[in-house]
Length: 355
Image 1 (cartoon, rainbow, N blue to C red):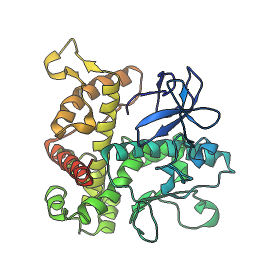
Image 2 (cartoon, one colour):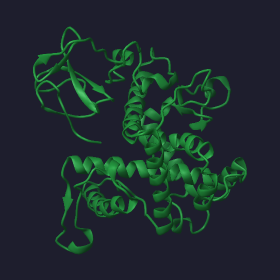
Image 3 (spheres, rainbow, N blue to C red):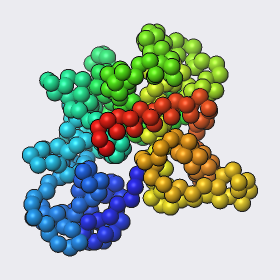
Image 4 (cartoon, rainbow, N blue to C red):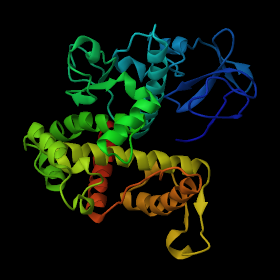
């Protein structure tokens, strides 16, 4: 994630800011400009202290403190929020707090998707497989019904609203033996399934994808049952980014897709802050300067050459604070091949769209 400026006073602002701490202007993120616009009391944009002609509005979800994006003319919801089909009952304070956290993570996802220039199709009668989200409250314990499961189905991404609770999410991480479980991780993973449909299945890429990830026609339900019953495939570390990725080619693709975006977004943050490492010991192997825009690199090797030294440093800082590693994953050579495929797939789609 990059750093931003207030359009009125040029003070530094962050992605989740709603007000400039310097000039106190209300702020709105405009995806088309990839920047924050200051808003005056008459809903005019403020550029360097000068009100602009026209009228700008925040997304309707700003009234719930769940969005800080601007809407396009005639729209009620912003680029990210218009993909919501179902949100939870907001009369519950717990639901509201969890939903705000979920929306924050979802907006980080949409920042990356629009930076890549990936297609963002809403779910309508004309496009029934468009990208959509439902954030559901699980009341199965009370009703005896089916529990809400996080997942993807033909463009519809479902997320249990309880995942917004740090305590609940951590309990699930421990129960499932996962090294890493975050809201942004959920979104990046599940949207990977959606883009498999769009870019691979519908993009004439099945043969190439299967050569890298394996045969997706393997029974998905049986593969997941086997994974949960028997545990991960022995030796999965040599070929997969995570144990779950080894369960089925679809999950391998989605996990690799998520990690690609993890790496790109984190490196953009490092780029924005001008981060570099130059350790006193092993200087040759772990020295790096993140001085490039990771959204614009030509190949994945440039990303990894910066990412590995950076994560060694940041993981070490986390350990100094008694925290888990920021990035507890090993990037084997087969995983790098998969990451390169994801890189090529995303940038190929971007070029076709004219970005």
